[in-house]
Image 1 (cartoon, rainbow, N blue to C red):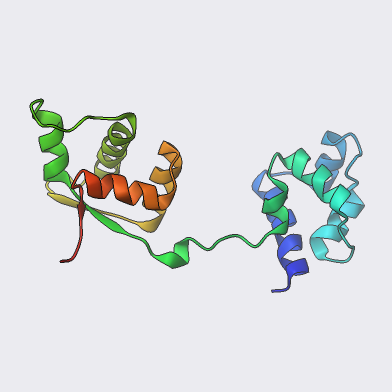
Image 2: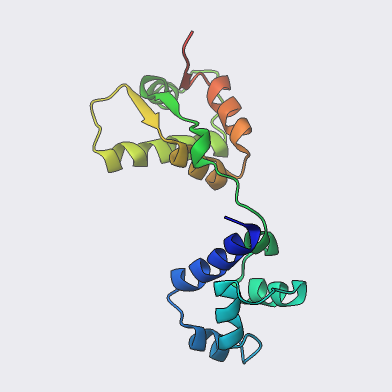
Length: 162
């Protein structure tokens, strides 16, 4: 896909994801974004100016970069992790352990508990986190992916091949 096609498809996708018609956008934007013009941008029939891209990004409440830059394909990176549930239980159960339970670590524990519950995996000693799980967890605790992996390693929660 060309850059124009990517921007056009992203404009259409964001509008449709919000369940809005072109006309509803025109009304909600107080005619700052005309239905016929937005439709032309979505089809790639009309050049999108920087000024109008800013107006549209502000209307949708997304960063301008979301409309104009190619997204990083995180799913293709395939970062997965296997966590040791026994270690998590030990850290929480043994108050004499020299592990300081930080807010980030507590978030990891809570997130992992929810994954176990959602998957109905009560007997496991290990749990595999999918790439999307890891991305979501990193975003939830407000750290980059590599920092999350380091948190897991430093607390010996991450099982890795030796």
